[in-house]
Length: 118
Length: 158
Image 1 (tube, each protein chain N blue to C red):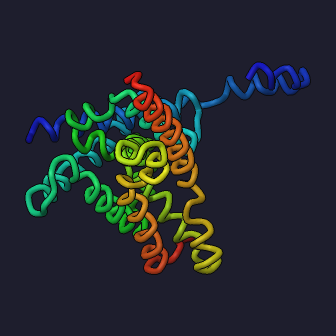
Image 2 (cartoon, rainbow over the protein chains, first blue to last red):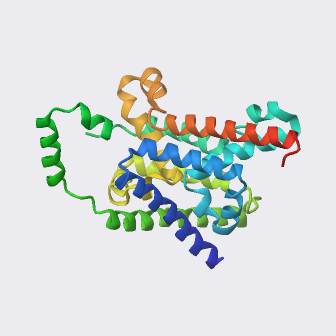
């Protein structure tokens, strides 16, 4: 369990360092950086490389935005195994629904509760 | 860069050289260290939350990621609302933007910011202003990857 915390910290930190290098060295905007990382996550899962990283680093791999791309591919593949090619469309958000719905629901609650500053 | 430079007049090129000379170099190593610690810490908290869900609720190692993501977005809502996440972002750079809390912050701060324009056109219309590109490119690339993989499986290649 301690090892899991350690690797979650290290791998999660390293993914953020990659993001920071894209900010500072390649001068990309946050939007471009995050979009690129999501695409990278999807491609990594296509080659079956992201799942071993989650098994190894736990939240260090599931919390960074790369896991969003991974989870999208995962949902699509799960459904595709059952229903064939149509499943790619119908299963897309099956695994990621929690992140998106949480963002929408808490975003709206946040807008109800808080007033903009400045 | 090369294409852009050709169109500039000599004066503009001179100015660009002058500008480059005076541009303050970004402290890349320092920023990377900050991003490493902030990002690592957020993932560490995430790991603690997922262990909490495994221990007290009916979740396994594989399924605990979903409630963890939702909880992290909830925490990010509180921190964004009280103005704390901006400060974390200023210190941590990508360390606060890359984790899912950064995605939550992008949605929630846009929602709060446009509240004055009304709930339908303001909050509803602008909520995904910043995070929309992540969803678009994530979904489309996942669609392409999954489609290729499914076709390859159907043909018996893999």
